[in-house]
Length: 164
Image 1 (spheres, helix red, strand yellow):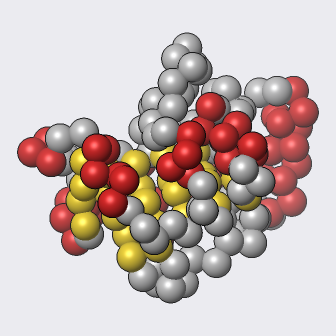
Image 2: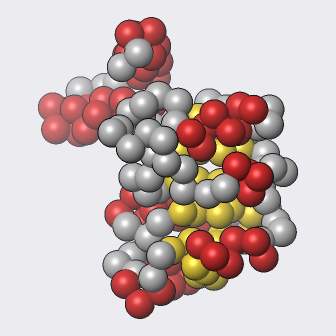
């Protein structure tokens, strides 16, 4: 998703919302691409289930106002997912200044978070491409078949056009 949207991660700062399994994958991806500063936002610092989080700054949601470095925002929580589509993990104005907003949610295709990003002309993406990529690569591994990027793009576009 970052690659498709030409988002440069190296030397950037990232805010990751959530500390579960999805955030572990996102944090690893950011680390592998030399993200300079990763901040993880959690509801409760005592209930962090993800070991990847302990290597980075951890803050509570009410501490978000102190965040000044804003390059990448990634939502790894279910907040805003169907059927609670009226919810957003952060306030509308918080996303001002970000270069890219990535919401791992894919139902709905446009969450409230992504609609705010769109409103502020911030590059953004949902989790549909990631979902399709994971499924196709899993099939490739399990069935020992070669997969071309074009297959992923084709499936993604087809699902997008259907409105998933």
